[in-house]
Length: 410
Image (cartoon, rainbow, N blue to C red):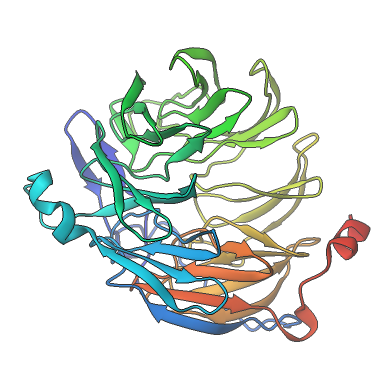
């Protein structure tokens, strides 16, 4: 049984210390076996197709994006394609390997896409471990422009009006003109000696990019200048070695009204004032996953795949679920009155948002799920490690609740 693990990257040495770990490599705690559940929700795979060779055992944040009536997907080898959202027919596909490999003059084999996909301003943006950032025409898949960023691109680009930004593994946060690809500015962040392999995308609000850093901070970069407006530590690393001092914020800060929520590895979950960065409350949790929210609750999956619901007003824990511990769960997502997560064996789990009980389950692909599920129009879109794009729907007693029903519950 395999256990997909978050890789560590020794920045000073430029090498991965741990990659593609098996369960025998990290046998500190056993992987939770699936037990019989009292199902009230019956998810089913309503459609699936192959989109290439997938991402294999490698670290990746590739996941579907939906906009302009299309589903955009990519695999590690450079196959990028678009499907009609309604008919699910292939609209276009692009092979990055033949398009860019000679131009990149890379020493390693393959184009190695890992960052994306972001669809905005009639374009589709995708990047990879070579530092390649490409803008495609959303209607045809034609290349509009391509640039070389400073470092590996491991998280989805962020679009804000006329700018697209990327966060590289070298700590560079770079901005490019959305129409031409012209580089506008770059802000270099300090990296500790040892970090997790991965970066978080920026969130954009009111003229600023809010981004997590590898040394446990949230920084705000001004869109027009690339200068720092403020930065605030959400966790101060301590410990006797580099491993215990890791405090990466490898997620996209969650902005809700006048507040920002973020979580760090080996650190804290915090609520901050959006305008000043003042910490309102802080609670001890460790995660490198995205947060989900609904009503007054935050939902998180920690670094041991324990799932929590937290009151976003004060940080008080509402419930926890350890039934799926160490199953390398994906970031959580919301669909109606339910919370969904995928695991390394390819199961999609459905939890009741009110108490955290597992109320449904379906095996999507035995090779495993790795990316946060995408929920659009009461459908769940998933990308699997072997290159399958799947659409899952909820059936039976678990029909998706209407907005009025969810509001009444809360």
